[in-house]
Structure formats: C-alpha cells, structure tokens
Image 1 (tube, rainbow, N blue to C red):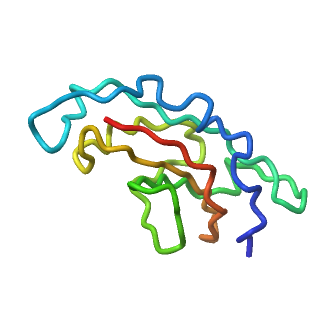
Image 2: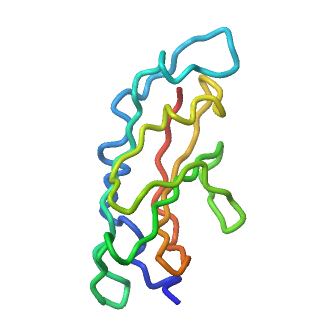
Length: 132
C-alpha cells in the first residue's frame, strides 16, 4: 500500500502561500453565507511528484483524487470526513462552495490529502485557516 509513502503532501503546498486571497470576514444576519455573495477564497496546492521513498509519482495516473477537509480546529485525524473531493488534475478549490455548511465569522482550518487509485490516503497537508 501507499499509505505513508506519499510525500507528506505538498510540503511545498501552495495551500499556504496562495491561500485565500480574500480572507476577511463579513457581516450577515443569517447563519450561512450564500456562495454568490461571498468573495472567492481559493485554496491552491501543488501535487506530490514522488512517494517518500523517492519513487516518481504521476498525479494524473497514480492519484484518484484530492480530498479537502475543513473544521473548526487545526487537528485533523483518520476519523475526519472530507468536505469535498476533486479530480487529480485539479490544483485549486473555491472554499466558498462550502458556504452553505459554514458560518460567517468563524475561523475554519483546511487540509488536503491525496488519494491513490487503490484508495490509500496520504498524510494531511499542513493546515491553513480562513473565515467567511
């Protein structure tokens, strides 16, 4: 299995560098923010190019997807459920698409995992934070 062999995903993870170009919160009288009225909060990452043992990895053929995890504390673990899943060729995700499940003004943490074709998952990426 590939568990633990995927590069600790995105050590260079632009999740942290290019994350959330519009991090400010907004005020709203409702408990959720409509995605259409919220500025984009784009999560950007780089795919791993090798397993931890140095074996080359081709994201287009070796990965099934990237899973995006969001919650109110920065500790992610094996029992957490992904909020979204994107194709292996995708390298960005607008977190505002999750707005119906999120509350404005709350700080959320986000992490990503790569999923191989056989279903093995990498470690979680470093976390980043955002709010709506």
